[in-house]
Image (spheres, rainbow, N blue to C red):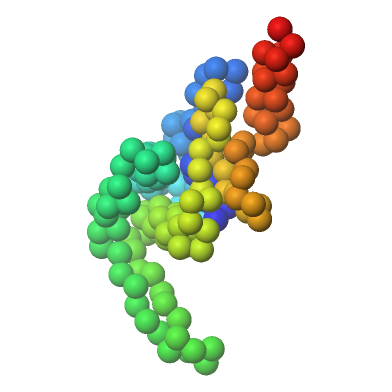
Length: 159
């Protein structure tokens, strides 16, 4: 799930400017390798496509079927081991990391439905995974976005 959030949050706004961790080939390669990928240009292109599709899905702008093209050529193979049944995912090498992110998104939706969401701060592009019992988390960071929103509301009340 960490790679899922890292990918969704790989295009933040910093001082009003977009910083894309996958935009430049050198930084993109580094990002992919840090997350277990190979860092090829084909992998980076697929990761950007995956990120954009997932962002649209989480925002409710696209249906989950938008991920279908990303899963072409992917197979799940059952294997019996001493520990029981185990599923192995077979995918082209450049697609492995993107497929793992899609599978992490599917697992998150199944285990924690509705808890992967965009930050409530309109000036923020980050996403959060709400693990709270009450399912009320709104901000990617209470220290940054939550504090800004509370300060803004306080300022409006006292004006």
